[in-house]
Image (cartoon, rainbow, N blue to C red; front, side, top):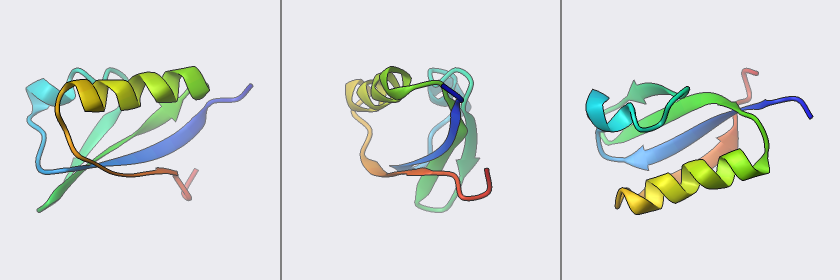
Length: 69
């Protein structure tokens, strides 16, 4: 299975330190959202990232495949 590039939007601005918890994903900070961008290996990897979002108490806004990929 080929990795898929995703864009995962989180409400608020993540610090670089907090963003480092999302190893392998780049941070795209915005005014009200931070977008995590990167390749997700498979469904288990995606669920792991989403669980980390929840465990850190972050508000998930959206999850989508990156149309630029």
